[in-house]
Length: 181
Image (cartoon, rainbow, N blue to C red; front, side, top):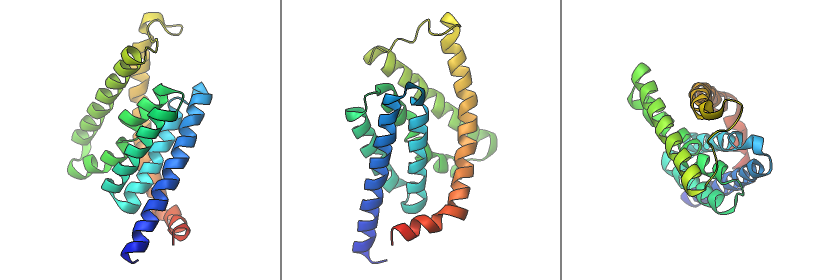
């Protein structure tokens, strides 16, 4: 593919991914049950960007989606979750797994997840003043329960991303490449 066409394909791909992500993130604002699901789905788009064009390009798309979602998405918690974890994680996942293996890889990924979630919690609760204390039937233990279930969910999300990457490469990549010829 010549250089001009490659740049055009990258720009159009980045624009389409950004637009789709903002639409899905906006749905996270309309339906509160999608507060965490919407940014997780948008993270999958970045995984495709990494596979097709590399981590640097995916980082540019990540910053565009993060900026726009913080600016226009009504559910700021959804936007913060994307910006601090779900958007960047698919980009760094491959780097972590490429440099480390096994238990060390999981320790680094869990460390990243927990630091990102703590920062997101602090931003949402202190800056955005989203009330988290005494939520739900568990009262003051709700945050501890959410943190624990979040770590279990992260494990499932990581494995799902790995399987989606494989499925994309072996089944869907040909279709996507045909769209951007």
